[in-house]
Image (cartoon, rainbow, N blue to C red):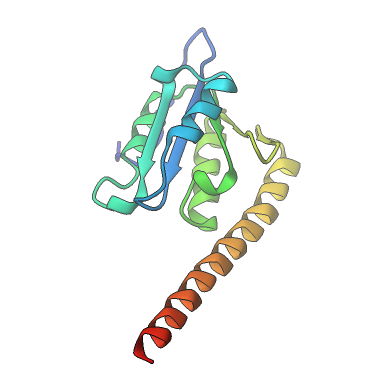
Length: 153
């Protein structure tokens, strides 16, 4: 089995896992982890990643994929925390959905549990989330350009 696939485990109890991800070195996982615990994930069942290092990219997600079993639920604070872009997010959701694992986005109020309506909503909202992220990056880049212009004058 390749390391990106999800194992099909079966068990008698259902577990609620948590997943947190930050995409910049200045971001902290603390708030996400606190929200995941408040929503029902035990600290030992919360996995996390820090995209800024890229060398450790998705190790937490890969461990989570090996741990989940049919019937489990994964809590994520917001949609944009599951993947770095829309395509990755949808791929991850489909992988979990294929083995009967639900994903609940706490702050977005979305529960993906194999129903087509949930997937349609997620696809639409993830496109919106990615557009918002792109606009934020553009604003940061514009601000940096203005700062350079000011420093040259």
